[in-house]
Length: 274
Ligand SMILES: C[S@@+](CC[C@H](N)C(=O)[O-])C[C@H]1O[C@@H](n2cnc3c(N)ncnc32)[C@H](O)[C@@H]1O
Image 1 (tube, protein in one colour):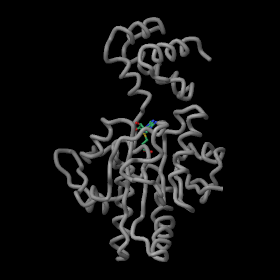
Image 2 (cartoon, rainbow, N blue to C red):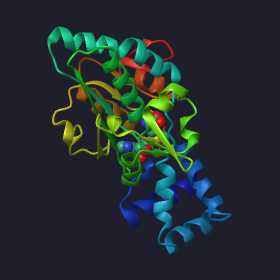
Image 3 (cartoon, helix red, strand yellow):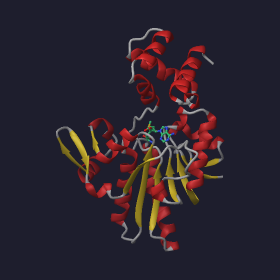
Image 4 (cartoon, rainbow, N blue to C red):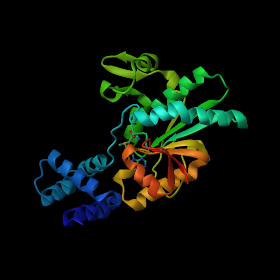
């Protein structure tokens, strides 16, 4: 490993008791480079000195590592399968078993785009089939700032590029260049803080016991080293109901397969336990 990177790992461990060795090495190195550029530091020595003297910078580096980019309907193929196949199949199962609730976990929801996209699909499905079955979405993230933004439900046009006009009109209001989620959609979602790497709890407290029909854990696995990826996927698996589905990011499909999941639709990043 790069000697410079080792120094940062040591610095964050000793100074803040934070283990940044869990992050994928190339992602870690890229994040450090980005912070070096942003702070005009030319060498590792300069940036290490900056990190130890400027109080807000360790948080700046952590924020960079927590990359929270998201958008509505981020992977269109996955959301199309969800809408056309997976959610209707789950609904049928609920009706046969006379169960009243579809339970979904958006396990790294950033500022809420993924959870609200799911809520839109659920709302449309409920509208089309009056069944007496409800949808409940538990949306969690380790970053409290992101969760505050998620609860606020206000978005700039940049994260809405994949939302068709009909959904924009139905589910958002528009004012001062900002799109705001309508209150009905918020009612589907329970936002809370949850660190997927914590050893203390297995699933979000509000969900009580997990038992999710669907867990979305997308676009965060690739930031981590294989050991942490395994821990996160074990946690997701533990919270799934029997026959439940796991969704990852498009570029994380191999990680899920290596950890014992079977892809249900080729290229769509939708899995079940093997
Ligand atoms: C790139 S965003 C992905 C958001 C969304 N899932 C998507 O696919 O668009 C990654 C999110 O993972 C969150 N995250 C990273 N590590 C986490 C952890 N250990 N536990 C919970 N959330 C985590 C970050 O805070 C960030 O909001």
